[in-house]
Length: 450
DNA sequence: AAAAAAG
Image (tube, rainbow, N blue to C red; front, side, top):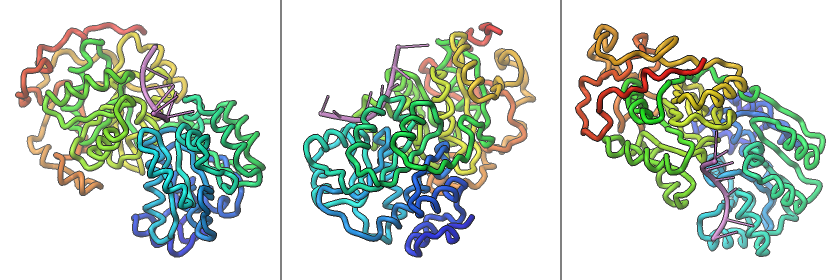
């Protein structure tokens, strides 16, 4: 379905067109007309489906008429993390460039002053994380009585993070005859209850079954041992010819240490985790988007919703404890129709986690390198690797010209010669001797439970 | 077991 047929204004269509879009995604085609008809909506969609634009676009047209009054925002969008809230704000700026809408982004970790000033001038859209919103509300800086459009984004994540009481609290402060849109990747019972309580006669629009597999993402398990993880990761980064990757760890300390180790080894690596102050988080994300760094080591703060174009690989340095997180993490690649590859390092103690992931997704993730045990030390098999020397110069045109100019060849996604090739290119890898290049660790012979 | 979010 074309955006032009959905009933959006000409100004909006121009902004959409200039952003390079013409076709609405299924969630957009389903949600936008109903929002314009003032229906309540339950949108069940994974991130990467165009979910954000499905509420941002119609909101811009709805809010185009009327004017905001001091401290009385006309609409409110709640997001679970600061990064997600900021991303929604960016969407409003991008698509609202031909409208005179005012907006305030209320997130923690930054000064309140500017946020309060914006509120006092009056805003059409308030985009907030629950903590800061409640804080400012309790200080009397916000009146929610004029707010008749509410969006709850990533509701299941809000649940995980314990925000549901806050959400309920906020809902009671909004006018009862408002329009409410709730988006969630999954519909666990507490979210259903929330929807029953605060939405009226909602229309449910579901585009992809939760946890259904994105066929654009190739998934692999890579068996390793705890102490061999860094070597395994480095081997993968090299053999995969990684273009842009996010590496997920379970702990903030692991994120920090791994990012440092990668930097020492000469990689353009950065980190993002919740112990960093907000300005560093934002700066690091910007460096990643700009291509200044091409490997972002991250905690689960970046697992959901984060939308960076052109991420070719996701590596789970640690297998996630919660199967949901797995789905969200690997969803950072294979976005917007692009191909992506996701590798999960597994140690014998991860058996249960992997089991749960496979149960959730209904997909048995293949072990990298074909069946069975990982390849032994790559002494032999010279025929297997790099049949063509010119492979590196065979870079395909990437969809991200900005990035392509700054980073080496994009990992060719469709090369027929993708082989296990553990430690490929080791011969030409004369990097610093920092422990990464030591002899092949014994993890390759570690046995794994059936 | 962790991480996230208010400070």
